[in-house]
Length: 459
Ligand SMILES: [Zn+2]
Ligand SMILES: [Zn+2]
Ligand SMILES: [Zn+2]
Image 1: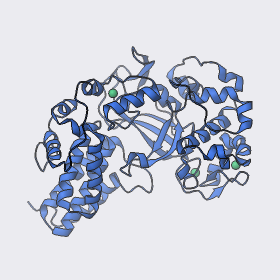
Image 2: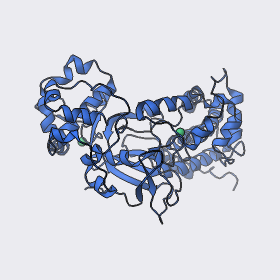
Image 3: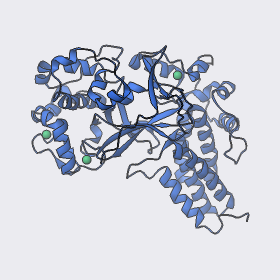
Image 4: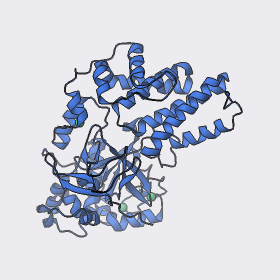
């Protein structure tokens, strides 16, 4: 069963700074949590450490069968194998059969370069069925969003080029000589347009990455913001990887919809460097404009207790509640510059993860509150990672209650759960079968609390 393209509320309009921008159509509004765009991948390729551990086509299930010819592609089912064969593998298979993956040129590349080489091969396998190499020489004209949606290869050829010339990844020699135009043209659109497919339930965004994917329509539509009003979530369903762009807040009619191209927690300078190197632009979002005027972040001092208390107090209205002060970018200007140093988030999250599992829970509570306050400052409103951390903190509160029987831990668990659920319902929970974080954690804890006779000690 295919999920249909949904581009209903989006319009692509001309923009003074970038090529185009995606806006909410006139007369329409988007609500927080709404899926604005849902598109299947054109092709994906697993990162090397996941090869053989996830299906090469759907990325979801553990593979049970390998291609009998090349032994290099593995799938979870006959269905995935047949679909991959028809889509691109029948062309790529002979190239892999000659031992390309074992060649020195391929093996000596980084994990990302290897995945890029595989992605380029699959894209060639797919595109060469319909388009001659010569046709990759020319620029594709702009088309209406509807037409771009129905012709993903055309849409891919219509994407902006990488700002810098880069050498091609290692590829089979026969392909380099037979399809130079395709390879160079497609490669010049890689990196600045493709997506890193990841899950977020591991609480460490980088370790959650498992594949690279091409989603031309999403690349064509959305500009970047460091304080975005939407984000891209990856869903594994109907036998392929889908990209969903979800609204993080209510978006009014004709307002731009922007997503983060980078982890929004990266410091200002790092963001600017990467945005100009990979995407070739200077970010002028409202957060960058504010941070440009602030002192550069400094390394947080050893034992950052005072700093943590300052962040917690700046964001939360009282020491137990989750009600927030009016917070936002301007609060950043009042706090010490070291809270914007990426080391501060790392210190807090590392300590939180150890305390949340092993205690002491009283300290996990303080660290967790500071970490969540920092997330609210550094990430966009309703960003999923904030919801996951909150679910973890609620779990720690429940464990503390089991250990001590103190009713305060039940009320902390309940408040934290409510806070977590409020975010995760907007951001969208994780759909991976093995993920036990997020909304699943919330549900489990809610039923545990509901079954607990002391759940309402005040009544
Ligand atoms: Zn599969
Ligand atoms: Zn094969
Ligand atoms: Zn920015």
